[in-house]
Length: 192
Image 1 (cartoon, rainbow, N blue to C red):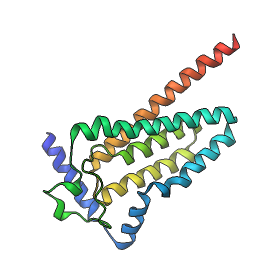
Image 2 (image 1 turned 90 degrees about the vertical axis):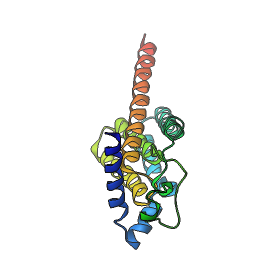
Image 3 (image 1 turned 60 degrees about the vertical axis):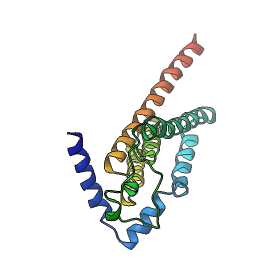
Image 4 (image 1 turned 45 degrees about the horizontal axis):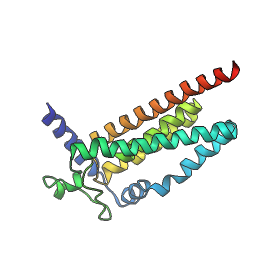
């Protein structure tokens, strides 16, 4: 069963990676870069401080940063360094079939995608905070594009992306729940 899933994963990867053009090469090469996403982060930070008091917004921002840092650390320490699954760009069985953009190959191991974990953690946490589709949908589209770029560039299989996104969203959900529980506890204790 596992071999069948890996085979399907590889077929989907090769199909997506094979859909290349000079325009998409440039677009996905840059969208995967951290600095391209900085405006997204600043918009969310601005909205936090616009909607909430400065102290509450700062607390939410701190927890959001912790969620993303945790998603990044867990995706590496609990997955990449445990499963040791080669990225497609380092897999000698399919290396010659992959379209590589600007000689970018990523690190050695790829399961799970840290890009997917981080962006989906940020997107879900933001969505839970703001509770509006006008914020959640664009953030999920952004996280999806960043994640898709990793397959397009040949550095992740689709399963790396899906599992990374799930890891990131689980972490965001846990951090948000901890925040709400602590917030309720401290709010009610101040009222006593």
